[in-house]
Length: 278
Image 1 (cartoon, helix red, strand yellow):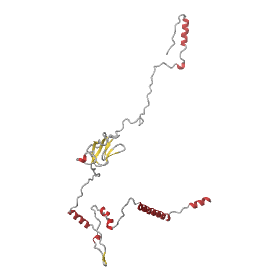
Image 2 (tube, rainbow, N blue to C red; image 1 turned 180 degrees about the vertical axis):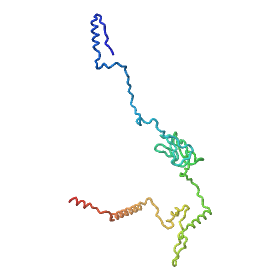
Image 3 (cartoon, one colour; image 1 turned 120 degrees about the horizontal axis):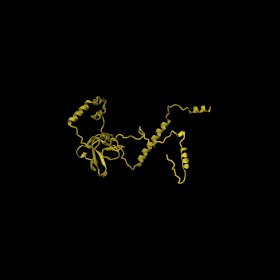
Image 4 (spheres, helix red, strand yellow; image 1 turned 90 degrees about the horizontal axis):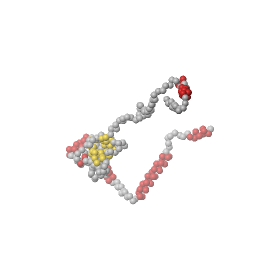
């Protein structure tokens, strides 16, 4: 506690000093503050508040995203297999490979994974593709320009093998065993004339279906002697006439639907209006 500095007067007596001392003693603390004693000073430091639990401050360590390559080079994949997971297009989809909205690359065909570059498409980009063959010219990516494309779905163009004599006899015996009784019956005689012979059975396929070939279906009009007028692009009269016929048929159908009586419930709107007037 600071005390006032006492200056000694150059000229004075001891009476003045006694009066000053008595005045200082009168400045003592009152009884209400007598219990207060001078103490050492304490420094209080305030720290920033910090949440102790929950996700208010974010997770300390999140789980990994499992990014990276899922299939290595020359590894066999089928459609739908994930090849590479990434954030951004570090790798671009190549041949027979698709890309998802999160930049995940996945296979579109059965084949083998290939990591490659294609300078003709882009000088710096890296691509991931699917080769349809493990070895040989079909296993190299990218395929050269104007090269014959490989067929998808695991099918390849191959010459058709003609049936042998043994195969023909086996097919005939199979058809004979499954032929119906009506097909084997002889033609019926009625008076002088003989009814038309029974038409030959439809060609029977080995997979258990009866179907006429497309070639014979296309020649049906020629067998019946039906002649179709050749199409002439400049003949607009024929096109207009056909259009008028379609419009006329549509109007007749609409009129027929309008005159047709409905079997629905009768309307009672009139009854409601009369009741309201009453």
